[in-house]
Image (cartoon, rainbow, N blue to C red; front, side, top):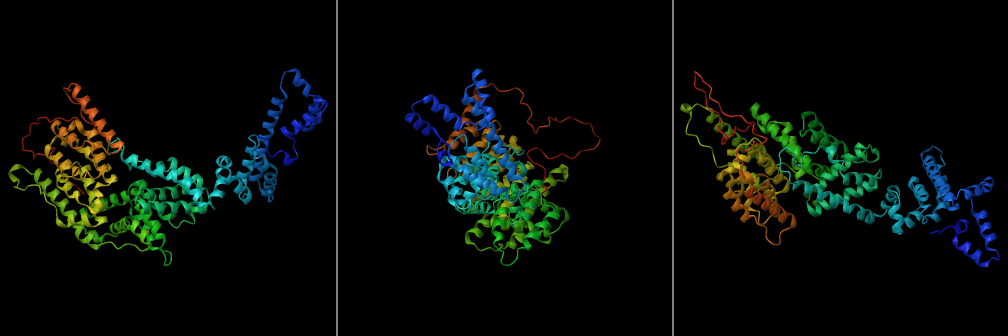
Length: 593
């Protein structure tokens, strides 16, 4: 406990033991030991007897003085470090040399750690001693650990690895959240809110202003992204940079060539839209990649592969197509649309680029613009035509029926092209948001076969299940349930557990709207196999319990209107002229893309 005192010429317990063993008058020896090792203040000696009279033990007195002096010394260390004296670090190194032998003494250790913390460059010998002792390493400040980590990538990796795992677990938990809603989904939190997450804050603190550590973390993220293809590592890449940006860590932001691009894109993600001004800025950054610096495209592609960036780009694409439709303009004539597709293509190609180490922008298949988008527009036109037809007076209606098939180009590109598939999936989300049952029944079966099974990815299924809550009442129809379940979700649930889980999530939320016979059939089909994961079994148990509780509770005479039901009831209004009938609830409004 008192190791190191003899090195400083201070007596310890062993010295007292030796003195008492060899002396003839123990009381005199003790008195002399106290005088030599007590507080060397002459005026204090005459005052100590007063403490004895008050029954205050000498230990208590000395401990209180010691604590006070230690706190003052630690304050002084901080003051010296923050001062402008050119020799301030020399003074701290001198104090470190004197105090370091006592680093294992609990009462002195805080002083030593304070000195280490304020030294921008701790002597290498001392760093190695701290690193070699697990207890010292554990209690030293992060400022000291940074100096250890920057030359020990494996040790730093051991510290960072649990945080990266935690980050992925948190993202996946959000995707499988029990809250199935269009209003509160995976993309609801703002960028600033996301950056307040525990992992991002801890990583930001661990990196500090150290460029070498920042580069190490980026390398970890690239490696893990390559190994797992998990796009959440791309999100963390962007969040970490913007977290350092918010703290104004210019030492890192100025050397990261992606900083301004990510900053501009972050503003777009906040607004969930890429406006014309920011589109020009983003294009300027992409066009400004100079020859010999193409490697930056690897990091830019990772930032664009972030699901939050991808979500913003596709939502902007859909909005851009709406404007083009209103202007009767062609997609290929819109520079903003072509830029959005260019960035989508770069983001979708992130894994291939980093894996191959060929840093070149992937060429966008022009047929996406000349074939796929017109095919998608024709689906919109079909919908408009049918919707307009339904609004005509009965005597003016033709025998037009709602189309059930899709253009070949639309389904082919969903299967063969990543960018087209991403746009197609978001168009279907757009349809669901508008509660367009007809269009949804036409489009959902096409999702059984998509590029790399993108339609069965967690992010899309999370969004789709939330959007389908907008059509809750339509789940009372056998035809609609057949399209959603038999025609799409149940085609792959047995081979993809994530699809199984998302299906159960949605049923937990909508089971009261589904016909009892359909629920019974679904429960038999969706019963988890024995080898299933615990989360899947837990979801199934929750649903079973809810259904049992529903059977036991008496039926309600009047169901309360849902949050989307405005409680409006038809009334008879006397008119002198005939009024065209509006579209029925089963035939939703036409889709303004």
